[in-house]
Length: 97
Image 1 (cartoon, rainbow, N blue to C red):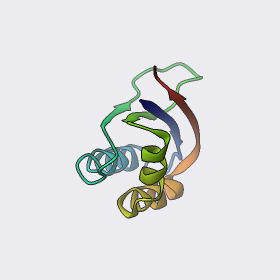
Image 2 (image 1 turned 90 degrees about the vertical axis):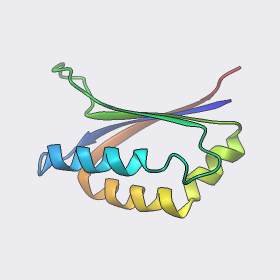
Image 3 (image 1 turned 180 degrees about the vertical axis):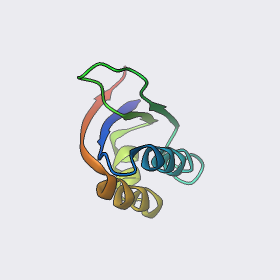
Image 4 (image 1 turned 45 degrees about the vertical axis):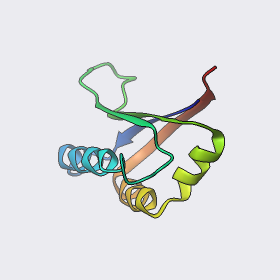
């Protein structure tokens, strides 16, 4: 199993609305992308300075499944939106044995 984690720091302009919209778009990917096995989208409530605004944890059967997700048209629509509202993001991909 492959785990894909992304954390996002959103721009201040329309931050709350953009987080809500991004969360809904991401959650809509479940069932739309065959290789996506699970997704957990979390909106941060921590006030720590090092905190990020939102994270996703997704799982796939294989690296090939993650690769297919990365280029899937529905995922690319989400990526296009997120690129316009996020300052930066961090990613971790690993195999769970």
